[in-house]
Structure formats: structure tokens, C-alpha cells
Amino acid sequence: MVFAMRVNSDYVHERVLRTSDDFVWPVDTAFLGRFVVDVEFLDLKACPGNGGVTRSIWPSDGKLQTVAAQSTLRCLSRMLDESIHADLTIITADGTLKAHKAVLSASSTVFHGLYLQNGDEEDTSTIHMEDMSEESCKSLLSYLYGTIKQEDFWNHRLPLLAAANKYEIGDLKDACEESLLEDLNSGNVLERLKDAWLYQLQNLKKGCFTFLFDFGKIYDVRDEINTFFQHADRELMQEMFLEVLTILK
Image (cartoon, rainbow, N blue to C red):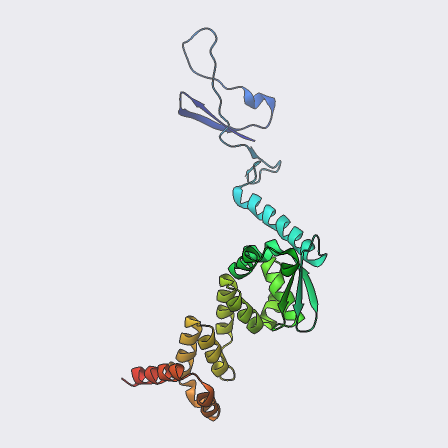
């Protein structure tokens, strides 16, 4: 271990303590008699026998937090997978799932408000989410419990986006928007633009405009653009025309 000593708040020495002989500390002084040295352990480090890098014997805050977070996620995963003390039934479009009111309430202001307004246990023990499939709802719950896998998130981005918007789960909504920007192409840009307008995703909308007009990909979707304009919101169409005028200027 590494030992550091201070005397009268002045730094004296730091040394590696391997054997009992290392604890002998000569001090030059003319004082005869007995005196007390106040020793402060600033840090204790373990030194490998082969002379490797010394490491603190105390876990760092970051490491401790990481261990605690992993333990918490394991517990939440078990709660969800094994329905431990589940007090909520979710009815989806094609099945039912079990969950916990406390987790959903902590994740969503909409869920939290629902349980605050209605204190009837029977009325709040079941929630209808029939606009989602069972698999999509599983992915939503996995996200809320912190155990979602990247593949599941990727496969259910659009239902997750709709749920995040409906239940006001801001961080999930941001994650979906960022993900939808990553694989923007000529085959999906018009659909992504409609989603951006529907859910007020400014970054996604800007990305679609840049892809279509700045990169000139509008010519790649000329066969689909007429159908798009027939169903697009009028304000969205105005924004698109203004974007074209800006580029032309």
C-alpha cells in the first residue's frame, strides 16, 4: 500500500509500505523525548507483487455507481420478467402484459396523473393500450425498466415514438427521433417527414428538408411526391415551398 504522512499540515513524504520495516520513519530533529505524530491516510493503494501499477483499495464513485446501476437493472428485469408484485395489467392489441404502476408513474407524467386523479384501485389496475401490439408494448416496458435491447428498439421505433408522444416520455421520444435520422434514405424520407410533422420533431424535419433539397434527393422521390402532397398538411407544404425558395435565393 501507499502511505502518505503530514506533520502540522505540511507534506512530508510518501512511500510504499510492503513490509514492517517500511513503517520505520526517520525524522531529523534535535528534540529529545517523546512526541506524537498525527498520521492521515490520504489514500491507500494496493501494489502488485510484480511491481505493476498501484490502485486504490477504495472503490471509486464511478465504479460504485456502475455496480449499483447494474444491480438495479437486474432487479428491475426480474420484476418485469417474473411479474414480481405486479399491480397493473396492460391490454394490448393482441395480448396482455403485467407491469408496475410505480415504474410507469415515475417514467410518465401522463401515467402519474392518471393514478393521482383516480384513486379507485380497480379502475387503475388495468390500462388499455390497444393501439400497440404486444411486442411493441414489451419493448416500451423494457425501455421504461432500463432493459431494452438495441434490436428491439430498432424494430419498434415508430410504435415507441407514438407511445412516447402520447404518454409524454421525453427521453424516449428524443431517442426515437435520433434513431430515425440515422437511416434516412430516398425510400423513407417522405414518411419520416410526415412523422416529424405529426410528432413535432424539429431535428427530423430539418434532416428531411436537408436530404430532399440541399442534397437534391427530391428528384429521387418525384414519383411519390404527388401522392405525398395530396395527403400532407397544408402548413407542412408551405414550409416545404419556403425551403425551396430559400435554396433558390
